[in-house]
Length: 176
Image 1 (cartoon, rainbow, N blue to C red):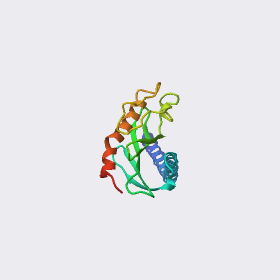
Image 2: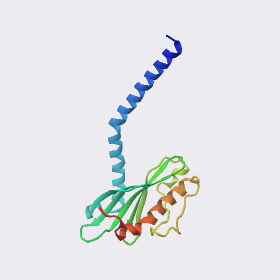
Image 3: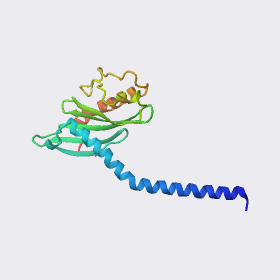
Image 4: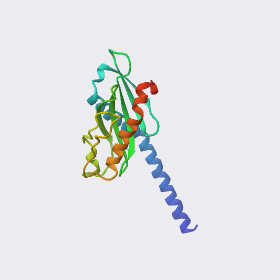
């Protein structure tokens, strides 16, 4: 048999075995990774609100919106807050944030929950105060000095996405 053909078959076999091993590892680790990511999100939710005081439900968003958490106070009627999981493309990958907005359209909190930005530069967005107090008014938005040309605009895009839809959601555009 031709040496080139044998080498090709050996390489193909190695590729199939490695691909199969990767699939098996992913099968067993994906649920644990999802569990850890969900725990991070719930910890962030607990930073914004005392969750025991609210009935919490989840709706899957579309496009750049992931899970949208709906909070209803146990003592009142109506929606009290939405917490949006929103994604935008940064320099090194996707930036994911949680943004909590109450019924007065005030931003109760926000947190970067996932990012792969450059350490020391783009990752300065984590924990930064962007000075957004009203979800529909981004005029006071303060970017991060020294962050890449992509990180700060990505965060601004995330806030803009929330600003574009929050009024409609509180007006009945989103329900359980």
